[in-house]
Amino acid sequence: MSEFLKNSEYKKTLLKEIIKKLHQGAKPEELKEEFKGVLKNVSPLEIPLIEQELVKEGIKASEIAKLCDLHVLIFREAVQNALKIDDLKDGHPLKTLALENEAITKDAEMIGLYSATLEKVSDKKDRENILNTLKELAQKIKKVYYTHYDREEMVIFPYIERRGLNAVSQVLWRKHDEIRAMIKKFINLTNKTTWNDEETVKSIVNLGRELSTALVDMVFRENNILYPTLKTLLSEGEWLAIKMQEEQFGYYGITPGDEWHPNVKPVFPYEITGISAEEMLSSIPQHMKDEFKKNNVELIPDDYSIKKDGDFEINVGFLNPKLVELIFKHLPVDITFIDENDRVKFYSEGKRIFPRSPSIIGRPVQLCHPPKSVYMVNKILEAFKSGKKDMAEFWIQMGPKFVYITYYALRDKDGKYKGTLEVTQEVSHIRELEGQKRLLDWE
Image 1: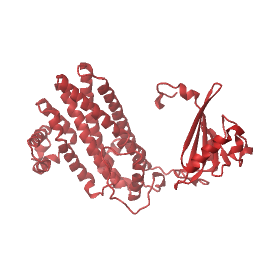
Image 2: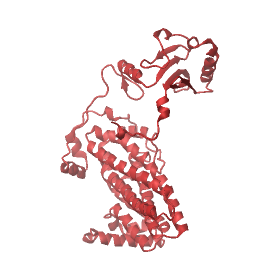
Image 3: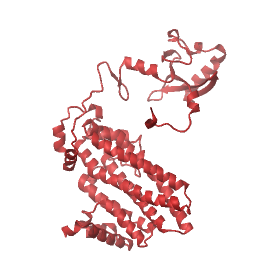
Image 4: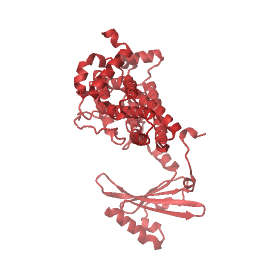
């Protein structure tokens, strides 16, 4: 039997039988047990191909879509073997990632199914319905790249890069970007086409299949390469720090549970020191070692210490007084800070729109304005102090310059008023910008 299971065509035949039984009303869990030996030896990448064959045989995509839990079931089987995610409490970042991949898998499969069906349909109403479904799916899958992918790139990758696994993060990030580009193109195609635009419809069919495969392939890479590696290498403190950063990126298709509360100190990448490449290699999965050896990858952990002598820790990061001066001096805006007693406490140097001199430090802000406008200054400050307002904005034309001025009420974590920040910027150039210029366009 084991030899037969290695045969791709044999596995496809058996899986088609499973899907047809599901179509007839059988429960996924029952069939999972019946075909357990097969499921363990099936790559998730094979299933979309089988579903396309079913479409060709005349089964509607809407019917096959009801069976997408089978696909997720197979993924869960594979992930459970590698990660044992059911042993992780709800809310653990690794479990969250794996559950998101289930949601991504479902939506990717739907895109593949409806794209394949579109090719077989010529009726106007049927085509319009399928195109509308694909538009909705395209907008939905777009969220994957600013939630799931962004979270991996900005929160998780720094932990493996600190250990010298830059090659892993760079390869996956490149794949993420390829998928991002495909999603954007797919959105554009589905938005602009009509039911009888044969050329664009054909492009949608081909790109939908390609996108579906790419999304599933990425899930497979993460579940079988990235996540087992993360599980081996990262400590509870590192996972806690990851958890603390998740919400600003959001999640794909799920709302994480709240059962995981480790009693540890959060550990950020810059706090990780004394990493031994040899010790790390001994603990990572064998297939990762094989990949490193095949590609001549040398692990060189990052031991750079970001905190230097004289640095003070702020909310996020480290600075020293000289760096603070340089930063304020080079900001493309003027900044003036007034404390809670209406006294000028600080202003930034550099190229200013409204000149300042050290003589104003300690001066009441009311005396820094012409007498005719003092009543308005007080009105703004009263609104800030009372909590009625948090911002005031103005813009004026000064010869060729268009100047944008904003005042912000600064409050501490308890909401207590601590002063006002004035920010002034010359925005003529910004107002004239059109189109786009990306980082890769710079010369």
